[in-house]
Image (cartoon, rainbow, N blue to C red):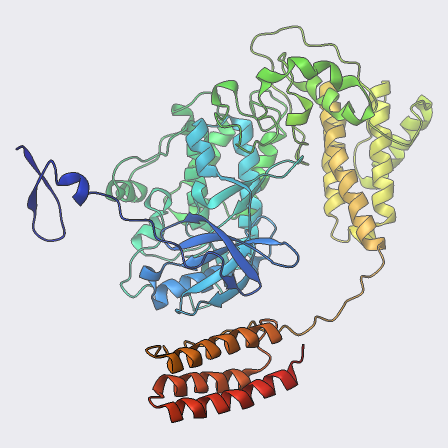
Length: 610
């Protein structure tokens, strides 16, 4: 009979063909003991993922229905260093407090000593999954994603926290119903808090991070700072633009390349990358940390300046979008603006111009190069982002004729040319900005809307915009309106103003809302947990009756206390009587236990009557 060899722990042995299926049969699945357990205020519902460090569960608050994710350290990884990683992650996240970072709001320890953290539950997928599905992304989508990553990354650096393991797998694209997807940074497990000397240091001195995204100073074991994260961001940008990382090979080869080998230009691997973006990625990949950009905010501003360029070749796309060749193959992929499938649009084109609610969508379609617009119900609202210029179409084609409808506003559409022009000059002088063009009806309409928002912002600035964030956004759109020469450009400004106006309205509503009455939280009563009880002998009728009575009294205790730990003294007495019953060998000893149980039962009924 033909034989073959399979590896075992230790020596090898020969197995026949008949033996192999039995020897290689998969073990029976084990039931996870944490399923259905209560950790703190949450009940574990299901296991949703596992990584090298821990297992992640979906949990739910049994009363209010709030869902959360709970990460539990793997039992085989139990060590002071690994527990410290969970602590570092929780501390780092709470030191930053940014909506673009996964929130961790509780920490605890299981009965077996394993630590766990309670986090917000996200719906969506990682950036790594998006890149696997689509390969490379176009320039517009890449710039949009990088800006979303840089905001929380800059906040982390300002809080003195360096991520040290920035990579696509640790960037999560969050899906939100009827809204634009957002990106969140996750896994600060090996983060370094710069202001503290309590950084995470393994006993063996091993290097922490992912080789494909590690900066040279991180590989050498040198000082780690914000520039380390910017280097990893450069690797991510290179991969997003070209579909591959700059250095390939085994881990050791890649690490040597990070230290010694100059990276190629992204434009040498893919077409359509602007020279300015090309240069920015190469600066992020400088070997010397001092030669990289000074901060995440500096990189973000350079990306914004790039997206505001007037030349069609500056950005390549007016809004974040993925070309048809790069569209995700899975219908569950959360898409940023422009990722909607353009091949399913014919039945819904006529619905676009039905009413004022769809006005912004109609104007946005006019700015697209001659292609079929996406269906309305699949395109989430555009984020409030810098105004950009749409590229010239590669193959000109007649675009659908859509009559621009005014953006919803309470002011009358008709106004004398002289009045708007005078207001433009006055507002420009007051703001130190050049006057807006008001030669056409479209220009007047945009000017009037900008003036109205400036007026509203100034009136409530102390209440809702003390730091001038909204005013800065309005000035940005004002400058774009000064340079706007096309109807499509003004349409994009109107869409950006929609977001500013919505945010201003929400801030005013929150400020003017009456204070919420704070209801003092009722003290929480922990659940009743019985300690391990000894086994009871059941060899004769007398022993069986005593054992059955003890079991019934435990059930009665749970029922009368409603499963709450409100009578610890009675619990201790019952455990003691259980122990006495386990040791009882004679009928007399069992009778003494029964008498003590009578007295205990009377105390239980007196304290917890039905």
